[in-house]
Length: 170
Image (cartoon, rainbow, N blue to C red; front, side, top):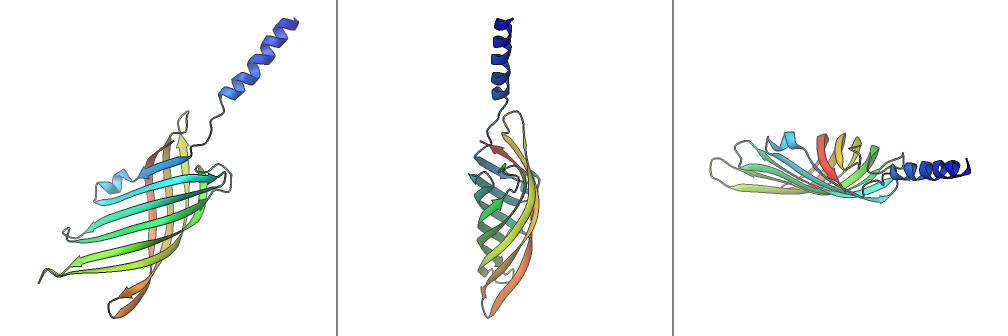
């Protein structure tokens, strides 16, 4: 009887330990649907605390006939109040550089404008799989752009959308 109790007691904690999955430290993601429409984005997110991540994001969008484009490079911080970063509900802020290049169809002159921006994000990330190595994320936010575009100062707000970012977590 004593031997059976020792064997069962030893088996229960080891079985519980085997099911503990450590949260991933990094996530690389993109939106495969928007990629098909020449709206490319790539994000890298790194866990820096149980409730927070830091990351970098890049976006490139071709506009019109392909001669006009929009680019952005931003750094962001996301706060996960449930202490399971990078999974679950998040909100945070971002800061970055945004550029728009347009080509005049009449004389083929190109104009470029570079602006800085600061914004906020809110969303949710699911970590899927037995090792939580597949990430799906949804979110929305806004970025306020500031800068000088030739003769006038620009201050405008743009929406940001994380429409089904899919990625690999490790």
